[in-house]
Length: 400
Image 1 (cartoon, rainbow, N blue to C red):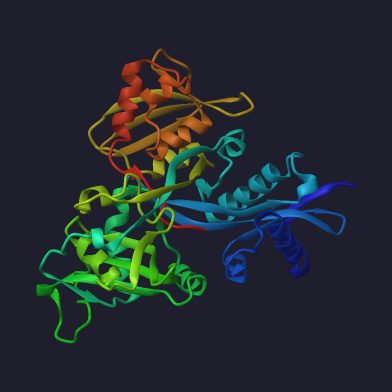
Image 2 (image 1 turned 180 degrees about the horizontal axis):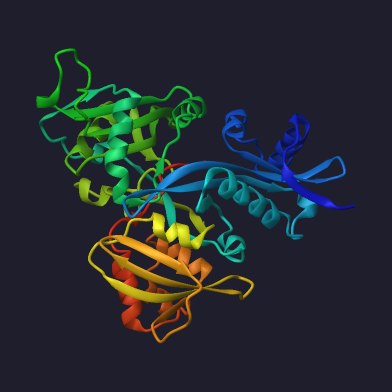
C-alpha cells in the first residue's frame, strides 16, 4: 500500500503524529496546538495508519544584519518500524516546500542530534549549542549605575531588535511566540536592568528603549537544599550590563545555589569568560543547529553582506545527488546579486550545498572548508567570499 506524505488532514491524523512523537521523544511537542495553528503539520500515512510527521514553523531570521524569510523544522518523528526507508526526508521536503511556497521561506533550520542525516539532504551544521552552570558566589560585584526592573515584552522586543542583527540566526519572533513561550515555561519571571539615569519616576523601565538587558528565569529544586535559577532567555547590551543582570538573577541570595543557562541561551564562546573574575563554569555540550538554503538565489540576495568586497565570481552548487547549479555572483556595498545559469570560468568556486549553508550562516569559512575537502576554488576567491561573509557569528538562541 502506498505511503502518502501530506499536510495532516484532520485531528485524528494529527493525534496519530503525536503518538509517534511519544515513541521518538517520550513526550509530545510543548503546546502543540499553538504550533499546529501557526505552522505546517505534515504526516506520512499508509491507509489509516500515521507513520510519522513533523512541524514546520514560519518566521524570519537575521543573517548579515538583515531579516531573511525562513522556517524551522521541529519534532520530526517516524515510527520505529519504518525508520531507514526515507520517510524523514520526504516529510522534511514536504514541510519545507510548504514553507517556501506558502510563506516565502528561502532557508530552513533545525536542531538535531543527527546532523549526518540532514547532511545527506543538503543541510549542514552552523553552530553547536551548550548549556552553562556556575555558582553565583563567583560573580563579581555588579557595576554601579544599574537598577533592576520588571520589563514588559515590548521593552524586551526592542532590545532584541537592536541586538539581533549582530548575529546570524536569531529569530524575528512572530507575534504568537511570546505567548507560546509563556505557556511552555510556566512560572517564569523576566527581570531587566536599566541605567539609573534613564529611569522614569514611576519605577518602570523607560519607554525610550533604555533597557540594557533582561533574563527570563524559572527556579528548580537544588539538592540537598536551595534552588537553581534556570535562565531561558538572556539578552544584554555590552559587557557591563551582564554582571548587573546576573546579580539580579541570583539576587545575592543563599537560596540560589547555582545559575544554569539552558542550551543555546548563550552563544559560543559565551560572554562568561570575560564577565567572571574566577572561571569555575561547567559547560555541557548539546547538539548543533543545521541549515539548508531552500532557494539559493533568493537566499543569497536576501542576506546582508560586508560592504567592502566588490566584484564578481562564478558559483557552482552541487546537490547531494551530484547535480550542479551554476550562478554568477556580483556584489557591492553589502548587496549581492545572483544570476542562475552562468558558464564555468577560471574564477568559479564549487561548493556542496551543505558547505554553502554552513558558510552562509558564518559557521564555516571557505578557506577552512577547502582544507577539509568541502570546497573547491582558488584560494584568493575563497578568501574574497569569506571577506564578503565577515561579521556576525552564528547563534540561534531560540529552541523549538
